[in-house]
Length: 92
Image (cartoon, rainbow, N blue to C red):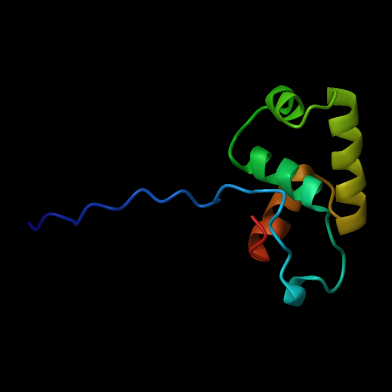
């Protein structure tokens, strides 16, 4: 029996900075703001809504409203689907 090579631990979602530009090829169709991308990135990293709200300096109610607006704009029913949408486009 041979030993399998170790798998390198690579984080699937790189850190997001608000100065990051959205590639022009991804600007077609629905779009999200850099702040919304930051929220989705933090959620993709596994932070709780409380932690995301603190990091983004907003209330939980504001965060929930922003997530609801993003989901409506992207025509998805859950923030996880918005995260997947952004990940598939290479935004997070």
